[in-house]
Image 1 (tube, rainbow, N blue to C red):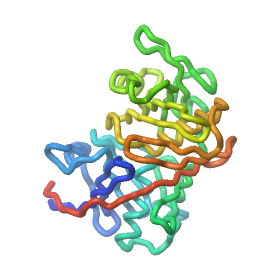
Image 2 (tube, rainbow, N blue to C red):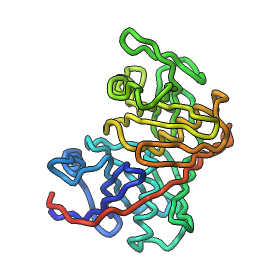
Image 3 (cartoon, helix red, strand yellow):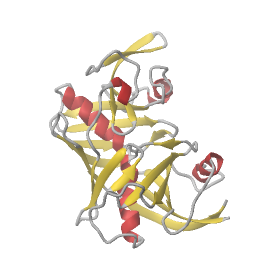
Length: 276
């Protein structure tokens, strides 16, 4: 069958976006993997599926599939692209929409300058909610990686994250420790592994090895998790500029049960059609 798609990116974190509102889309895991393949398909970090909501409070339903074909709960950069997609394709004329995800509702807003701000919801630290195998919530947890023990912060932003502070992200062991953390047995649903360098109290640099995708140029939920982790440790202020390899995000968190706010760009790259 022929499938229409839109290629989009947020800070180089790239997506194939499918309109499941005006057409019925039912693909297998292998077909999603084929779409994400950079050699034999379109190529992307994640596939985003826009659908009608099942929740009466929401305007749309948002589903995310990694390049390996597995469905995941949340994607921050994808949520910004989602807003640009439904606006540019005439699916809504609202500047702020309510979107249903696998982990609850998010409320992204299209700003006058074209950037998108997203209420990412409140972070969760209870081990069972992440999920993470630990007796209780701690700001930092020791994690055994072979013969080395590292300190990580475990947090859910609708999807699981492990954040490690490093001196320099350019020399951080992302390629070696990223896969080890991602598939660590203490994270039963796997985890996104973040490596954060604190530049100053309002600025960090970040690299993320994403679950099911490998290292990406940017990770929106990873940026949120990193800033939350730094604030909990008393190392960061409430508003932080996050420098990823693909560009910059602004993350804000007032602490406690307040939601995390993320602001950044979303860009349409091209439209196309593929036989699948």
